[in-house]
Image 1 (cartoon, rainbow over the protein chains, first blue to last red):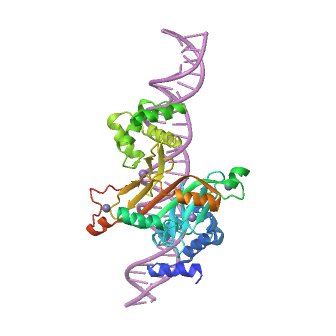
Image 2 (cartoon, rainbow over the protein chains, first blue to last red; image 1 turned 30 degrees about the horizontal axis):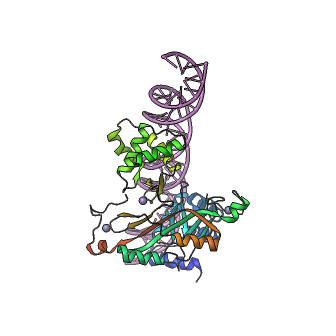
Image 3 (spheres, protein in one colour; image 1 turned 90 degrees about the vertical axis):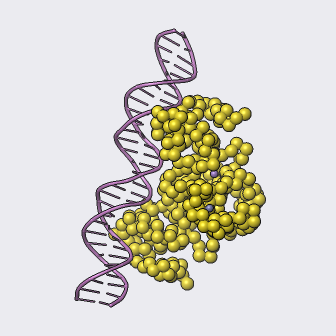
Length: 157
Length: 157
DNA sequence: TGCTTATTTCGTAACGATTACTAATTATCA
DNA sequence: TGATAATTAGTAATCGTTACGAAATAAGCA
Ligand SMILES: [Mn+2]
Ligand SMILES: [Mn+2]
Ligand SMILES: [Zn+2]
Ligand SMILES: [Zn+2]
């Protein structure tokens, strides 16, 4: 099943309609999976395929996608909310590597926290349902070449 | 050395003055170390000891404390920035357990990520300088007793 | 000590991301 | 088809934060 069909099912399962506006917005997220787009950025991009779509609809749709756990609303400290597709296969949120030399943001889709989660269960009586893990640091290649704000390094903002 | 003296030294080291206003604000953070106060909350509390202190000064001081790495500016998704004291001994930010039954927020001051950090160094050529790790889930005691928004459980917001 | 300059504070206006609201449009279904 | 519910569009209002100018305070120096 292709991604858009799968999302359509998730909408239907909760009695929401995947309208043409919502589909256009979801398609923007799928087409830019590597980015972590803000509302304004989604709005700008979706206007190419759907020129009359309103900003409030983007806000409402991204909020709905968050409720349905299709995207994760994240805050990276730059003053705007950013939306990150959660893959269907992963139960928990993926991790992030953020380079503070060039701003590149890499994703780690494997769950590296399963051991810590069972430790929390054992030692704290705490059952983890989700988590957020961001590493800040720098790639050794970035440090040596000094690729400051390089075009090949996609900054978060 | 007591905490406030140590912070005074950090100010002096960067050629900043620990004015009476700044000291009053820092004291509020120290007195409420377990909470994760917002600007507005700090402002309300500091008015008890320093009634004429202005809101803009709270904003500016917390920003300065963030620059000096004395506090960490965090966003828990409730629409306001919250400020969290980083202890001096810990190089990296501490972790959080957030109960989604009662909202309690517990801190784990040990760094549970050292193994993952060396793995990042090895496999990704990425040197970690800091990180953020929040676990969302529920305490088994909360699930069984159903302590919804209980007074003994201090919510993040 | 007096004078000059840099720092900090204060109050408030401006800003900007988000939310709320109303009317118009579209889907649902009897 | 007609009534009802869901969705959208546009925009006004909200609210956390930032910017700004004037006043106060501290530091440097003769
Ligand atoms: Mn991501
Ligand atoms: Mn904390
Ligand atoms: Zn880089
Ligand atoms: Zn609880």
